[in-house]
Amino acid sequence: MEKSPNIKDHLPPALVQKIELEGLTDAIRLLHKPPVDAPVSWTNAGINPGQKRLAFEELLAHRLCMRRLRNDSKQKKAPQLNADESCFPSFLRHCRSL
Image 1 (spheres, helix red, strand yellow):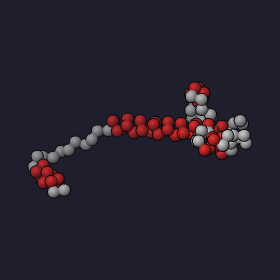
Image 2 (tube, one colour):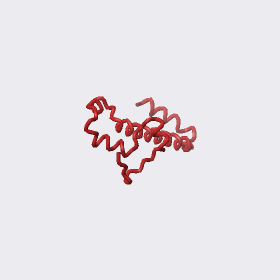
Image 3 (cartoon, rainbow, N blue to C red):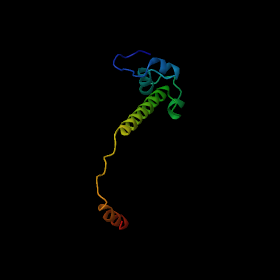
Image 4 (tube, rainbow, N blue to C red):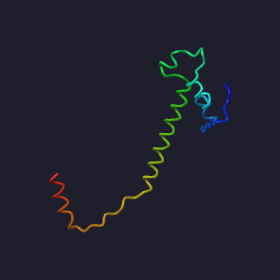
């Protein structure tokens, strides 16, 4: 398939090849303009190679975002509560009334 200079693929080519994914440009073309002889099962069963590529990329992006969120939250500490013991009885009474 013809390559487009307008679509930048951020996955390393070695990874794309190793897990047998389509390139990003090809994946988008397969979804939006599948070959005339493409099996109908591609769409019905959700096995279009373009879908596989974009699903992988979406799951990877989600996983990376969740990892970043976890790492960021581990670096932040909760603020210390500076209260004397006199506030605890009032707090406990309030909790019991809920």
